[in-house]
Amino acid sequence: MSPTRIRVGIETSRLKSFASALDWPGWSRPGKTPEAAVETLLLYAPRYAAVAGRAALSLAPGDLDAEIVEQVEGDATTAFGAPSVTFEADRAPSNAAEAKRIAALVQAAWTTFDEAASAAPEELRKGPRGGGRNTSRIVEHVVGAEQAYATRLGVRVRMPDPTDAAAVAALRAAILEPLRRPSDGSPIDRWTQRYAARRIAWHAIDHAWEIEDRST
Image (tube, rainbow, N blue to C red):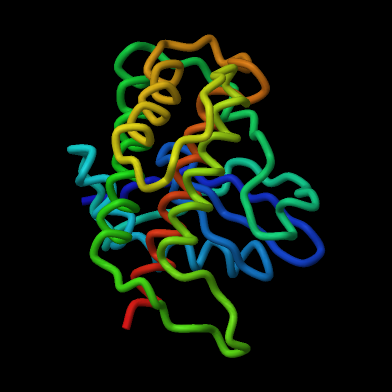
């Protein structure tokens, strides 16, 4: 059986590179170099496969072939530590089935984050210099970012109380609405459908994995 082809986009800055699996929203990992970023991306395949499974999608993490199809210059956000560049692949249109798949992976990223946060202690293990938010602060940060991300899709929703599950669910439902619709690839507002899904899902998954890794 031939390896599963993973189309990868690379954004590179002086300080950091990001490798993103272009067909799998949220599967993006950094590295000091493009090569290191791709290596890390593949190392995280088993963890991302669990996210895909929540969306009822299959990803066999043991037999993957990363094919770099785009490599572009990053920006200050890339250097800071977030995937920031819209690739040409992010401007591809989506039909109803693909839009449904994209939205399902974003929802799976949120489920992954919520489960990690609910299972974690409030006090998380600190970094080498004593830094790092505790669980409730990470939840507050993620929900706040989602409210900001919504505006990039033309969605105007008031910032919910991060502890109000119904209000957070309403925010996320509003974000999913434009992601579920077929797209011609043009920006919905400031972000394209595919880039929005990549960025939103990555943020939730990245912090879910942070919580898991820092739980005692």
